[in-house]
Picture 1 (cartoon, helix red, strand yellow):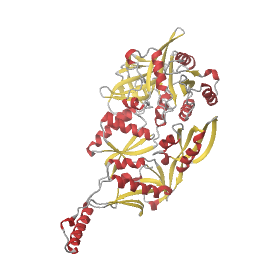
Picture 2: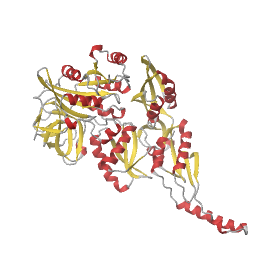
Picture 3: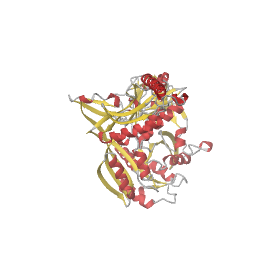
Picture 4: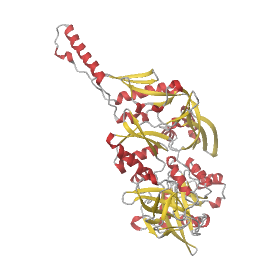
Length: 595
């Protein structure tokens, strides 16, 4: 056990985590020859196309140092704030972390938040300055920033390049020397922490775990504490590039278990595995439930696919534990699910994966956040969906979630960024200079305002230089109103939103204008109205497609023409009573792109 090292790689987006992981695998000869490709651990097509890591990936390496053989378990983590839950789970399975900082960009928001997460879990931090081969690298300035952030001696910072391989052996040696060996008692009752799971259509559900105490062997009769289910361990093994079976996995090591589990509800990330014959007294503590930030309705385009969508979401949830969902129904879209995501990128990725991996065509409604609604008697109800809002006469006040946001940017972009944050009802808390021309601004902002397009706007204002990170801070009372969209007097519940009273009129007007462009013309006039309660605040009309009924009248008396027009008018009126308006899928998505 003293020769095992478990560590993860944490950093901001695009600071070269996966590239450095490639070099570590190459230099320890874990991956050789034709298997050696760029971002070898990113095995999903989506990850390769977008150049981002979505899932954490675990792999075992062997390394020979000073006459001894060491086993290094590496977990490569995502950098984007929407996948921070993956990072927190990887950190729970490690004793050390490589903190990677780009030598050209310096410390950014996600670097800091991932670092704090690692410090909370008492990990040994090894600072690495990556990309020192770039012409734009500023190694000395970035070293100053790292020293200021970590308070470590300057000589502890390792300089490396994932591209050229410079400094990789130093990193491996430092991991062996500095990362503590896992603590645990091989003689104690078995306790394994599940930190990930995947679905395999041939073998059922495969759970990845770290052995905290005890030893697990092939054929053991084991029990999952949280669900109370018992299984036989058909196969246990360690994670190389592919799975490699072993007879036993000892304390401190990381491995996988296949036990023919068929239903996804029986495996929960953060659960503890123990022996049935000699069970551990309690589960491993310190595991957090995920808190979704953004809620959206996901509906099958064909209502017969409802059960298939449920099965697809359950399988996807195994692979992505931060996805939550529950069934709901909508008058416009039929039966579907209310899904909770960690952010907009997460929502987009889930949609893409449903399409690619499960062939599910889905409609996604406008994303929103959860509110606390207090009635006149003082009872509190959590509302995730505008249609779940009680009658306005019964509501005393509504609390909405606020976040504490930290934006790190170049000083030249402070003005436009402050304007953007104030436009989103932000409250400036403090601003501090990190180094010469870099400043960190802290804002309190309503989560509902940043859900749709805040991150994109921030990136375009700052030419991609500002980095953004946030955490839920508290709930505060706000003047919120429910904005309904009516088509010919009928509310379309999939388009209704909760919005602040100050923004409601302009938002309603823009919604009506956008829908006028997107809804196809019918044989009758369509009135598109935005309403707050019974009060109409905006209206647009989609004009009817008309036939020229007077074309056959050459000259003659006006009364003949009038008679034909009156007859047509009657017909249009009758049509309007029975006609329904089709809302195209584009209209639901267009709301997200409102500027």
